[in-house]
Length: 139
Image 1 (cartoon, helix red, strand yellow):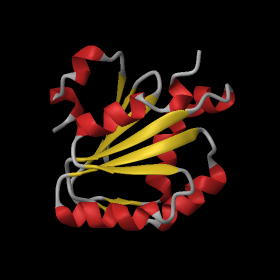
Image 2 (spheres, rainbow, N blue to C red):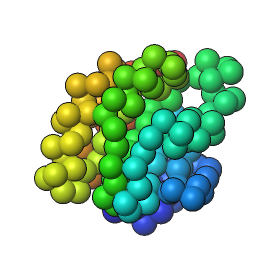
Image 3 (cartoon, rainbow, N blue to C red):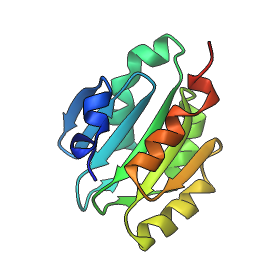
Image 4 (cartoon, helix red, strand yellow):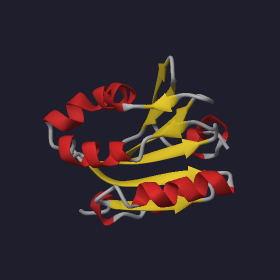
């Protein structure tokens, strides 16, 4: 299910950013990406996504990241290692997989990400998990 077709599109305030390779929805505590069918996510694409968070990075704000994999695309799991080294503003990630193959790939990616990475079968599961993280529930 896409974010815009989910109940959360009506419940959460968000900003939608459209790229030639997909979309990202930025909420107060996390971002949801929905990338296009058949692309290959490389460091350049990851950098374009990260560029949307310059204010958060500058202000040391922490966010979560949800990859809503409604389309099939390739992702170099080694990017997580580079990402860990270059960007510290992401506290946790969730990968929503709609096929067994995608779920298996997310299992491999989990080994390269040095923070919490949850593999989910639905966008609802990923958002509920993300909203429950202690980093976003401190008063």
